[in-house]
Image 1 (cartoon, protein in one colour):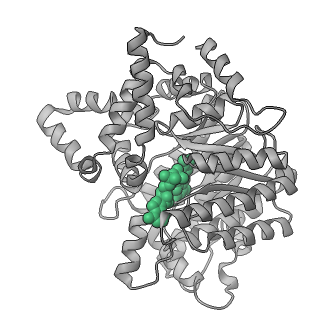
Image 2 (cartoon, rainbow, N blue to C red):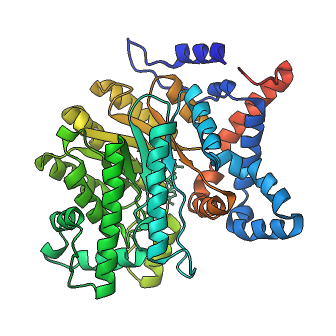
Image 3 (cartoon, rainbow, N blue to C red):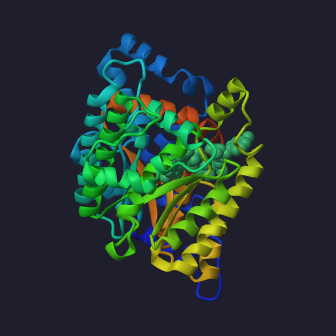
Length: 457
Ligand SMILES: Cc1cc2nc3c(=O)[nH]c(=O)nc-3n(C[C@H](O)[C@H](O)[C@H](O)COP(=O)(O)OP(=O)(O)OC[C@H]3O[C@@H](n4cnc5c(N)ncnc54)[C@H](O)[C@@H]3O)c2cc1C
């Protein structure tokens, strides 16, 4: 493997003379074992098959009934679970992280949580408290297991700690015309500090109690994460709750994004598929700068397109998403340009994760970083999902860029509903992974012809 690594590094490093596009030609697959390549090819082929994605959960329970839990579990572990999930035990997660580290990739742990509004156990204060403990454990795992150099990051889903129902009500209130001092980030930050009962007039007593409990949970995670030197990347979700999530992140940012304390410790996510994202990003960057706060951004295209459009149709409201894929990509490109200029002018107080598998976006980012003099391993990093587009991640990692793989972990029962939901949200990406499949087939064929099917070590 070392030989292959050296060869790749020498091809792909940005040259001193000028910028050179990275080659996402699958050359980096030489670092992977034949078994890993074969599994990746099989799983990506299966995931590109629409019925499997649509009826994933039903098929799983059918297989469980027909084959029994042990056999169906073993099949899942050697295929979809094995491809996209780090494992369940600390040892399994550690093994996955060490393997990524050996390939030049970093880890971004993510707790997979799926709320089920009709379930008696997966909702209510007890469920959110259990999720709080899962998040605190994720901070510990990020501190203890991550071996790579560079900042330790983890993903945080706010609706694991507070109910989407409350976020929806807060969003309706935030969207009302006119200023609303009752729901200012300052007021929420004070309530987080004091732990005293916050009263918001648009909410009933039960909702006020839940808001205070949610603020306390968020505060505990952020405080603990900062103490353990782990940065929180807050996920963006649906437009009917995002304004409430942004309000909560702004409250956290007031306390945890002070540059003199090593901030930003709490980053927000911006979805380029929304029409207003570029304007909001510019406004938030400017506001953070004016307030003397550091600013951290995870930039994505956005995962909830189908549901966003379905909700808009159902409610007869305007569609807030870009009209087509090209418009989303133009928006991503403009947001990327904006953030890279911010990083170039504000240095280490401004951080960006380019969270995309898109080769064009990554070419744009690496080229502009070079033009703006942003170091390859500085405040800009890249993010891709575990098991997806390894040809892109490996090429970036081997060239010295900071690349994080988003890594869910947990038991089969916890993770399969989460994976099924993610696969449904990323249907177009999975179907579009044809290039990755072609590159995997090409590398497997090369090994077969050369009789070289050994594990590279
Ligand atoms: C590390 C990481 C963290 C992430 N965190 C989040 C998060 O917090 N919130 C979130 O929403 N997503 C998140 N995502 C998912 C992300 O938003 C995308 O769904 C996914 O990365 C695919 O986009 P791409 O740029 O990688 O690939 P591409 O294949 O280039 O883009 C696919 C995306 O283009 C857009 N698109 C496709 N068709 C159309 C169309 N007809 N009209 C308009 N737009 C279209 C959609 O956004 C679709 O997901 C994350 C992804 C990564 C890698």
